[in-house]
Image 1 (cartoon, rainbow, N blue to C red):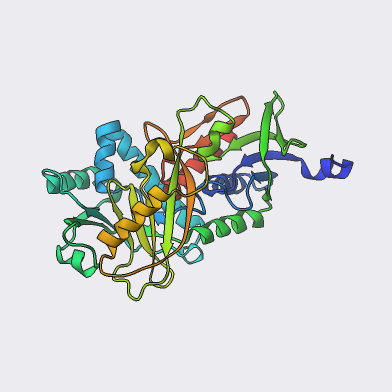
Image 2 (cartoon, helix red, strand yellow):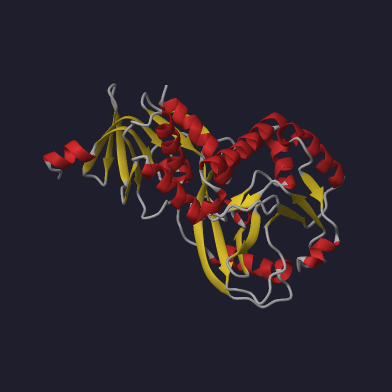
Length: 374
């Protein structure tokens, strides 16, 4: 039940954005940069963003060699290059909007650990470098010296090769979201948490958004940026949720590596955090069916697999303890492209970051904002 004053002061906007993750906040930022006088509201159902924006690994990456080769085999060269370019441009746009220091961005580089060297692999690396040169204007992937594997403390019997990429980096996901929130709130964008959107009613004059089964907000146009949770509103999109499970170790006595690391086509990923701690996530490919879910919980089979890989591959000569585990929800499409389009006259959908939200989120948000402003 709303009072006259509440209805007059809190429920009417030019734009409403559903979701306060990287994309939702970046849409608000783009809108308010283009139309500073706009009244903008972001509705978030959780205390924090509910998907993956504050639950990811904090990787500023655009694709591993084996991942890109797999994408080329599936969706072709042109589509893969288009995605890489959008991710790379997205990272530059994000860093232009939010200072590196505020989100603890470090261009620490990344490595892919090759466990089984594919046939003619070095020729395939050369092929990727030639393909990517128009975007980066120099060589992207380098075969690291073999002794680097031992220097990092990895199991040399399992890790056969390292491929280095100096363009990628890492950041603090929590500070990124905090900084984006501060950025838009300084420009008078409102963010309301604990708002579970139940339904939309699109009319010729605008959109009515029902929240918590009792409050109706209104806006001229609405953007839905809830990524893996889009199915709760529209089930016809070819978007599947994908859960990512993550753990962090307690501080180790020594940590021989810093930076970002991936293996198995990017399905596993780890990095240094805190004081000699390892953040390690992935394993979704062990159970695609079971991990196609929006349920935010960890499972023993995935977490135990991550622990086993820590023991055998990553830090085989050290004892360790797990400090915490968690899960986040991503969204994937068969063609690896985000879904960005009007779904009704005044509602735009912008979802499915395909596990690359940090990189591609800003460019996706810019496209959404441009659609809303049409």
